[in-house]
Length: 259
Image (tube, rainbow, N blue to C red; front, side, top):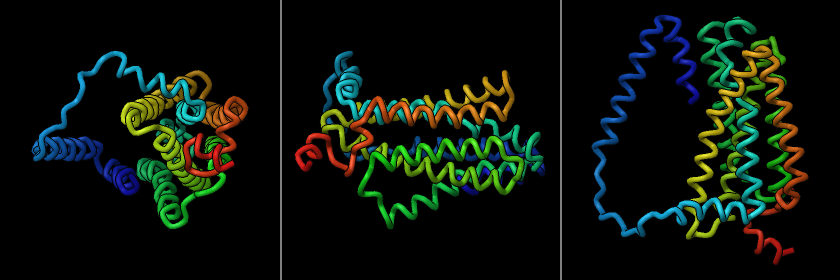
């Protein structure tokens, strides 16, 4: 995620055909290696899937306000914050940095995420979980706006690094809350729904950014996405006040007992 885009930009500057060939080789190798994996232990017996079991995860999420708030917050923020989909436009028309610069722009969020992950591994967030989650969502929105308005390549790189760092903190908090708020018997289904929302929101966010850019231009598209992320965070703080008051990584009932 860090070296790949930068290296891709360098290879693209030499020959675009080499990029497609390299991707073909790597994907074919991955598919081949994964297909050779064999399970040694017999698969555990499972109940046949029914419509009720499939919908149980949705019903549980709807019944838990904190869980619903965490998952939907991620969904709408990511849909509005799809600035990275427009990086080719910025690299060519706004920053004029070419394919190598595009590779560096694509690498910047991953650099921020990696640095943040290393810091969190040593200094995890243990208190004021809710406030920190909304704070980093706000930083994500501000960084998106700064990138959208920037015409300086170093400033754009810095904004993307901050964007990736804030997103990494948000992901750690949100995924931890989803796991902790869900009982063992429903964790698989709830996690599947969470990953479904995460994956679909990324794709929808890129579509939304491209659609708005086609109507209004690339810069308004990115800025609107950043402002929208800030508005979503503000609205969710009002709609889900319990989410803002989360102090520790504990289920709601245990936190209430502690209080």
